[in-house]
Length: 441
Image (tube, rainbow, N blue to C red; front, side, top):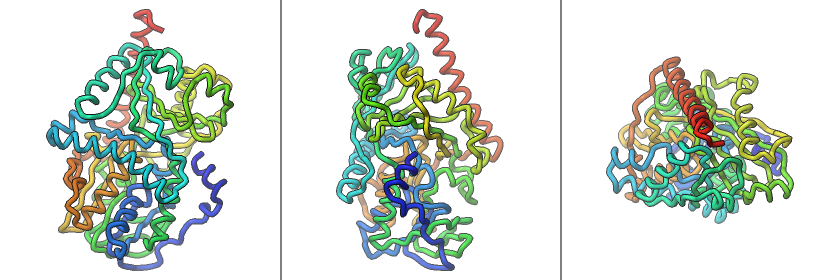
């Protein structure tokens, strides 16, 4: 849907940039023209306009998760603050949480300053609990948030209804630290911006090997002082990083534009985001053209092949449509006009990371899981500081240099991811059944 909107507004985006034309050199080669790679290029140009930055992508800029996400720009990470504190100390955990909150603001600030028309709307997120187990989980989340400086306000059912009117709500919570944006519009305009400032961007140029000081592609070899891997889930296709993350499938749907009467009934303002608190959570947003976008992870989750076709993936969309009508009975009969999805990169411990090895010149960032938009901005700023040698607070954040345990190979990894997804779904079904037996809805 995001790409349909973008191509309607900017038909020129349908024309890809040329691929690499033979061997070349650069100061910095960035593999991956999603948000991580493009933010890295942007902040490198801010720090040192004279740097020769070359960004490569196997498809077109934004074709991956960066251009087809849910539209959330959230301060969340896939690892809890308590786990960050256990691994890195309390101060480091607080610093990283604060940096993530600041990253949401930074994305909006750059979008405004650079005139990136991406519908950035700072409207916050409301989380809804629909059974007793979810409510207990939400209360625990709120207690942890308060301990680490995050703002998460617990709400009673009536207070939830001031943000969102949904069926069967027992309670909820609200955080301001989330915005909505049009992801394809952001990534494509950011690509245009870095090119306008002197970066080179080559598309349809697949990297087959990333080595110290070199990127080998099907169209030639790039030699560079610094090489940054910013390919997220597609790390699983590259020699040397195939076990760093598991590619996990997420899927989304979008409704037709809905009339004002519908929005008055559910109370969600434009750009407002929401979620339930299930283990296999549903999350959604009201877009600026009055659609509902809803989705999440598939129960099976594991990507067996990057060329899976939509016909193989109907079951999660059916679950999301049932979830849409369960949350919002007024959506019964509403047409679903778009269905899409693809992989995100999930580290084995859920812990995203950023790093740069000065000896080899190899840098990396990724492992954001379901929340990569703000994290990619923070990663890009951090990589720029690491490359340019800036001794900023960002280079001392505890995700810098973190190494997650590696996944098992091949089918074993897929089995582990699939088992975790089905365990989450079964836990949700058990909680729903327990609520019904106890006299709940």
